[in-house]
Length: 555
Image (cartoon, rainbow, N blue to C red; front, side, top):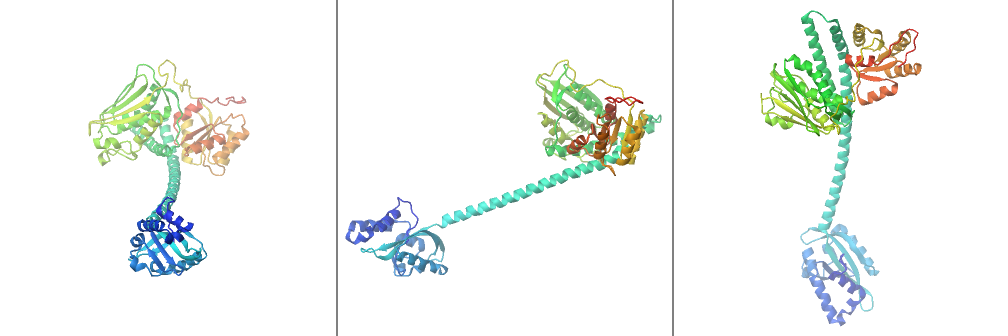
């Protein structure tokens, strides 16, 4: 008989103990024990079966009938193979051999077949039955249906396998996304480099034309148009790189205590060409008391510049634009309002989404990639602030509200931390090394028109020769040079100029953080991205002590 796995306190367990303790042998002489055993067998939910050593069924309880579908009349006298699949008949022979040796088979999981033909997963416990002399005369078997348990285990295994497969797939997709993100960053960096290279000579030439101050209004207007469009292209390139850096968490803020007035002044000056070109009226109001923020001056000026540029772009000519700042003692609220085309109510929740543009109609197309407001939101959030868009609807103007925490000691008479005394531009000896001939020549003419002594070289090797012959105060050095690249040129200059008398300025189309780090390691003092703003060069030149004949240069 095979005893199925049962709890120690169950009737089946009790029955098994009776069988193995010898009480079964005494049943004929103990009517009370026999009645008890009969009651247990009859009431058990498990299949309790007895058989001879030849495998012939001798008893069959109600549990066996429920499990296998055969009545006692149908089963008793039949071979146990009645419920054993053909391919498992060998199991029965092995079990009977063990029983004859007096062994017990416990928790044996196998498959049996019901009268209906349905296969059933069962767990069996089979024990030898002994007579009064202790001889093995048969077997008792207790079987339990474990189909549900097996199915649950299989489902659990399948779920675990699926989970592992999903985890592996997720890891693969994450790796693919990381690789795609890396390639995207590389593409944007190369794109920016390739766009900046042709923009550099255009901007240099435009600045040179401005220095010549042509009396012809038509020529001045043409020059101003080119200048505005170049600035627009540069801004698009910068926005692309900025949104990429912010999205990947690679942008850092250079925070310092800076005045609100200086931030607004820088933003207004940068946006003035766009505002004046459309004849807009700009009104700016600031708090009466000085207000300071712990902020990145350049980035917050960029936020306000983007908002002012948007207002100028989406307001019909001759409109009104306002920038109004209020300080409540703890935070600053800056409102940029306009009388422009407005924003439909359904668009308000989406205006800060990447690549979203409020009006894509041809007649109102003003360029742009739809990332300016996304940049505004991300940069404001990096400063611990919020930005909100409001509009009453189409043609009713727009309002953007930027809220920023003020410095702990905001008001006072101290000057902004980043302010410096204005210095006149000094005439210095400049060496330009750039393999883009148009960029090098236009920058040369621009600097000569400002009174500087300029020499030019078009590759790294010629540049190193020119350093010795021209004895420059400052070298404007491209990175991607033929023969000797800019990094190695910088290192060789530093080897011959250990006191760093020569100011090295990287002038390049590469502007990623890694590019700046590498240029600093190579010995550069400054890193400017093409096209270079002439004001940036003037600020560098203002801090240089020019070379004089036979006089050592001291910085």
